[in-house]
Length: 290
Image (cartoon, rainbow, N blue to C red; front, side, top):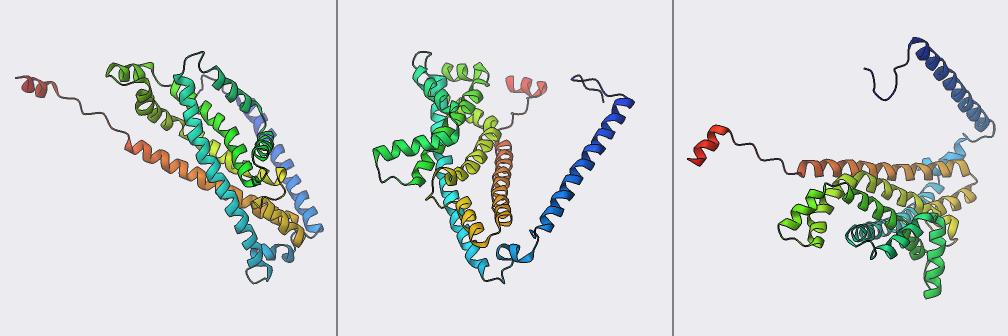
């Protein structure tokens, strides 16, 4: 089938595409083979490097996974707090930015644009310094949560604002016409509809929050998250590649779980949407009127 976006390639163009694809595949396979050969020559596939991570019969296996489990717990707790706070604060800020007047929302716009323009690692550093000035005993854990919340809440606020503005204006006008206040219209009419359309973007931002928790190892030296635990293990066992691959697979598994949860939630919301009432047949309508 032809597309209106671009011209369909002819036989010669398709042949060139197949040739280029074949050449690219050969190059990629060659690079992979070279990497495997180099890893094999340096002993990276030796069993003793993988056994502490994969073989329960080894002495180090239980201790290694206990350390990784403790780090994973810290990562998940920080993610849960930062994600919850970011969602709540982001929805409030996004709804307020849409509801307030042009002048009243200027300070809010300034805060949103400020944190949107900062790299997340700078935001975490900034949150740590502010919290330590307020209370010198503040732990790095809360500094990480505060930094992730400050950065991601403004991103979620923009997602919420875009979702609300994408709704037809008649939705808000209908709510106001039946006597609802603007706040009630936002809470009961606009936000529920917007959240359904924004769900994929919100879940994507939650995945970003999960991955950004790994910045704790870069910013702090006392927060024992999953990456910190992997760093301790690789130094102790001298198997950096193997340990970091396992840590990467754990992060990938967590992101896949979040993605599956998003798909399940979206399907549940789609099934729970009210269906339109069946139309009344003309004959039945006439009988009803009689």
